[in-house]
View 1 (cartoon, rainbow, N blue to C red):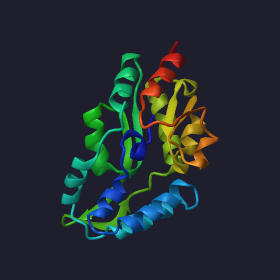
View 2: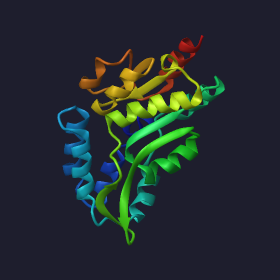
View 3: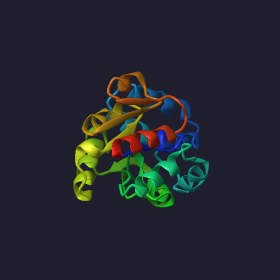
View 4: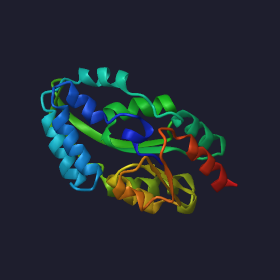
Length: 207
C-alpha cells in the first residue's frame, strides 16, 4: 500500500490547488509542519482546506494535468499484479484527484478525503471523517483481509508522519525519501526519486 502525495505522485495536491488562489506558501508551511509530525494532521488538513473555500472545482482539472506519477510507480503496480498481489493507495488528499489516478494506474483499492462542494465551488470543509494516520493503518488491515493476504505479507510505502501507523502495521515498511520523523519506522529507505527499488524488495519478500 502506498501513500499518495510525494510518494505515488511527485506533487502535493493541496499545494497545487492553493497555488491557483495564490496561497501556496501559507498552505505549504502547514503541510510541512504536519509531515514533520509537529502539527496534528487532522487539524492541519482542516486549516488548509478552509483556506481553499471559494475555489472552483474547475481547478481540479487544471491540477490533474500538472500531476506526475513518481518514476517507477507504474512499474511497481505492474510488478505487484504480476505476482498476484493487490495494490492500494490511501491519501490525506482528495478523492476528486485520486479517483482518476487510481483508474489510470490500475489500483485495486484507494481512499481519500472528499471535499464539500456547493454550486461548483469548495466550501472549505471535508465531507465525513478526515483520512488520517489511523485511517491509513485501518485501510491496510481491511484491504489485506479482503484480499486474503496476511499482514506479514503486506508492504507499506510512505514519506511522512501521517504514514507511521501504516508502516507499523505492514510486514515490510518502506520509507520513500522520508521525513526524519518517519525514518526510524522504516525497514528499508529509498533515497532516490524512484519507486523501482521497491520492486527488488517486493521480489525478495515473495521468494
